[in-house]
Length: 347
Ligand SMILES: [Zn+2]
Ligand SMILES: [Zn+2]
Image (cartoon, rainbow, N blue to C red):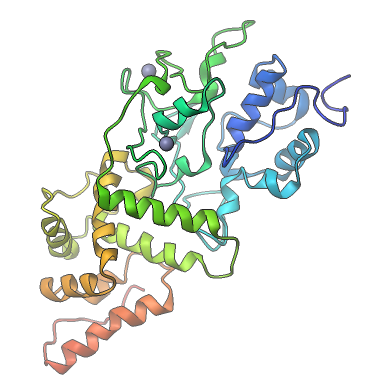
């Protein structure tokens, strides 16, 4: 019976815990002894798959049909997409242009120019014979595994190539790839054999906290406001604006980290930064949050950072955060220090 008309695919596989759509799709194609490209051409003849970010685009014709063919609810199928973070990590999912929190892939033809797919080698090892890619590994906030306690990786440590797990079949015209998804598609090293460094305790606690938040949360209406503030703090710490230099240096020095600004453009976009850079930023933000909001307010005060700079990186700031920062304005007015030019400017 053709794949496209049967009620269920004959050799369907169910999504694993927090599995990413593209990983689930690839495992289904391999279960049918078909290459992913061929499988998708048969099932969705009119759709292009591997030259765009299908996890982020969350096309209804893909996740709805997957639900039907595999026998899970449409809700469960949708949960494999990055768009399902809507209402949890961000107010609205964006299918085009930049998106908060979702690591950029830099897709060029069928390969990636950016390092937007991360993995935990220890999770792969625990998966045994059927390793798969987790959805949360695509998030800019993810730097360490909350369960294994080790650092993630965003490249193959042997050949330094980005992870593009659907590529193992390219160049093998008839042969179906026999490598598990945990293998590098450039040099075929198995990531499940790797061991990475332990995450610093402060970072690990923080990773566990936010991971729990997204795991527990459903679309509660404004749960994303916590992540909006977090995003703002990370942007302040990674911005290349000269007016934020003192603030950034003070936070890094409080953690006894050697200070340097990330090497990007005038405004670094968090979602394009490499894991090592994000690890530093996440450690700094975890320190700020450890005594919230006193540490943030103290650093702003001590470094005389303009409030307009603190409020200027985003258009998504929750009112409560803006109000918190503006309390400093009142403090400064009280002490007759007038160094602030237009506290709401740029918000
Ligand atoms: Zn892990
Ligand atoms: Zn490699």
